[in-house]
Length: 137
Image 1 (tube, rainbow, N blue to C red):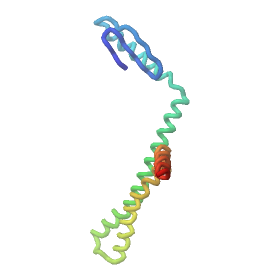
Image 2: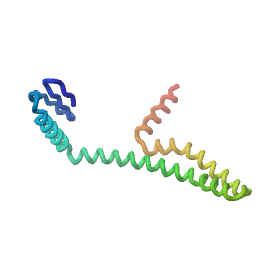
Image 3: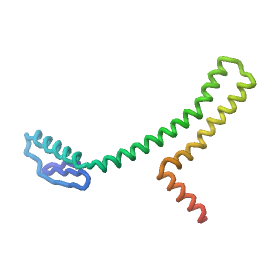
Image 4: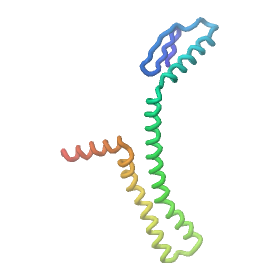
């Protein structure tokens, strides 16, 4: 929304409307007009467009959830082993478990690009386009 002295431009989606501002002293009238225009814009959304927005939001949340679950699964064993190691002495079985847990931490860095390509369509398309460019070289 852009307000210019003497004229008010309101832009909601494809709707553009220009009106003259009320004279000085009737700012409340301008506020009421602005609120009514906002309510009209909000009510113009259809259920279908809201469903599209919600489905995209749901996909984003699920993709982020997958990345965070992977982060926890890969880093939690190392945190537990390190805590146990500080309480108890460093024994050979604990050393082997610590090496396995450290491998999981490094594996997390390798799994993130795979998760991004699997869950996010735009990343998958960018990877396909990049690999196609490398084949042309």
